[in-house]
Amino acid sequence: QVQLVESGGGLVQAGGSLRLSCAASGRTIIISAMGWFRQAPGKEREFVAAIDYSGTSTRYGNFAKGRFTISRDNAKNTVYLQMNSLKPEDTAVYYCNAPLGATLALPGNYWGQGTQVTVSS
Image 1 (cartoon, rainbow, N blue to C red):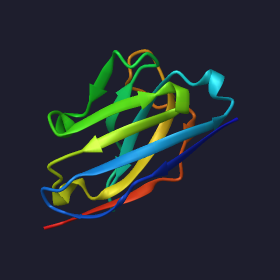
Image 2: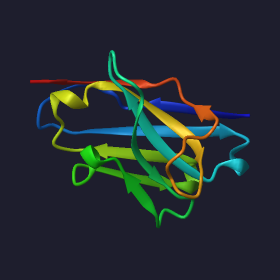
Image 3: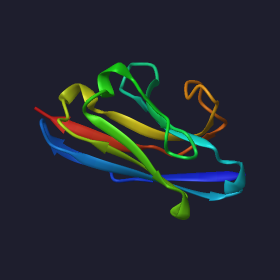
C-alpha cells in the first residue's frame, strides 16, 4: 500500500501563489511517476500536471502551462506543485496521484485525500 498526503492548500487572492506538497509513504518502491489532478464543484476531475521518477519529463494540462510547475524530491518521497498567477477558476480540490503510466496521462491507483485551493477575485 501507498499513502499520499497533500498539504499547502488554502485561500489566496487572484494573482497570488500557492505551493502544494504531496508526501508518499508505505510501499514507495512502487512509486514512479506522480501527478496532480483537481476537481471543482459540479465538474469532473481533471488532469493538472505529472512528473516522471527522474524529474526530467513533465506534462501539464493546458490551463497549467506557464503558471504551474511540478517538481519532486525523491529523497523525501515528495512531489510539489508550485502554482503562480492563480485565477478564481483554479478553485478546486487538488489531489495527488500515483503511479501514473509512462505517458504521464492516466491516473494510477493511489489518491491522496485532497487539499482545497480557493482563489478569491
